Amino acid sequence: MASPIDAAGWRFDNSYARLPAGLHTRTTPVPVRSPKIVILNAPLATTLGLDAEAIGGPDGAGVCAGNTLPPVADPIAQAYAGHQYGHFTNLGDGRAILLGEQIAPDGRRCDIQLKGAGRTRYSRGGDGRAALGPMLREYLISEAMHALGIPTTRSLAVTMTGEAVFREEVLAGAVLVRVAASHIRVGTFEYAAAVADPSLLPALLAHAIGRHDPGLADAPEPAIAFLEAVIDRQAELVARWMHVGFVHGVMNTDNAAVSGETIDYGPCAFLDAYHPATVFSSIDRQGRYAYGNQPAITHWNLARLAESLLPAVPGEEPVALERIREVLATFPARYDRHALAGWRAKLGLFTMDDADQTLVSSLLTAMAEIRADFTDTFAALAGAAVSAAPPPPFDTGPLAVWLVAWRARLGRQSQSLAEVSARMRRTNPLVIPRNHRVEEALAAAAVGEMAPFERLLDAVTHPFDDAEETGPYRHGPPAGCGPYRTFCGT
Ligand code: AMP
Ligand code: MG
Image (cartoon, rainbow, N blue to C red; front, side, top):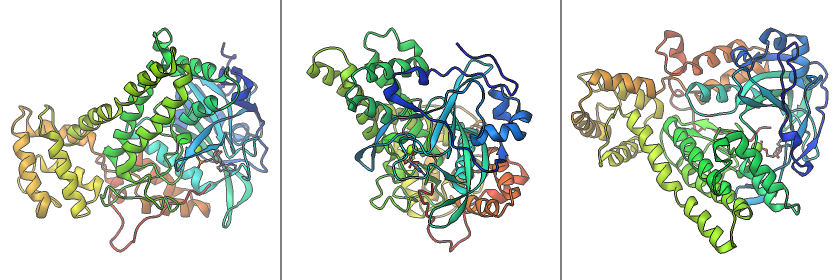
């Protein structure tokens, strides 16, 4: 039962906190010196049933920083494990605290989590804190992903703490209010399957099904049906990343949500020049999480979920294992289906042709050959549908050759070129968070200048608008910038 609504609009029902104690630890955020909200997502607040003015005021800042709790909160740190770069580790919320689950006016249930709220039982050597730059980066990129139509956790606010955090340098501390369908990860199931208490896994599974797949509660084999649902969501999610050139950067199993939302914006970045081997994260030296590896890594992560669910599948183990294997084996075909559907939309194709996959692959190969800008190339192609002379980069070289095949393919469907172009403009963004622009905005924010961040946020949250104001945010870095590097910056 949800609590009554308080003055700011908080209305919680803390179902995760009611799960067995092994899955979490009651933890109060550690108060900070002087909370000051630097960015607030008023439209999201309204969607959640919150009074944006109250949240943006002094009392709201206290809540967003963890200094005061909404009366209905039941704060916990969640336990989870995870495979990090292929190695199993016990983790848990080392610097995040779940305040509770907001019941929005439309009935949706959303986790309200403070990231950077102080030490928890799971902090290990960490300080439990977060720096302003990485929290603003998560805010910006998660909101850009949402505007691109890609499932993601959302960002409600970033609040400066008035305290310093010590990394390689001294940085301003901040807390992010993260909003998610849930924070249940593949790693949460790995944790539940690994602990001695056999009651945790069924409890977690029933909870996750109730939350994300209520229709499966009465399925003959709920664990199998749930696995299948997560596989499909993750297959679609990673396909959506591929379609916009998003590189998550740290696809450990603790950073894979069973809800199918993109979660944990650490070293992520968008491609400028296209090459499938692109890696941005400075610590990903083997390229495990390179752009082109993301579908295979998703499959690998889902295999960890499948193993964890094995004890929850009825029947003798060999039979259960066989059922799990069968479902897991559906990943590649599911991925291919979601991926091809999205590529077709990006190419303005309304019909299906056996040669479409080849058409897509040959485009990507040609783009890699000339290191074409990923976003600009698809945006140019939308224009090429209706222009007589091919625009760059389709005017010469391998892309000019490819264009002839594409135009022939367009001729084999009945839709007009105007319809083709319109579909492509709805599908291919003009604006993504360009790495050099993100860095520029974060550098300004670090010295107290938020205007560049706000302008960039406005542009990336209108990715398909052909508005003049977004012009400066549209293209890649000037030549000679060198490769972009991200750091796990916490
Ligand atoms: P991430 O790379 O952000 O997914 O974090 C991996 C693990 O490290 C999670 O268990 C986090 O809670 C934990 N962690 C990250 N930063 C900190 C920090 N500053 N203090 C404590 N734990 C942290
Ligand atoms: Mg994480």
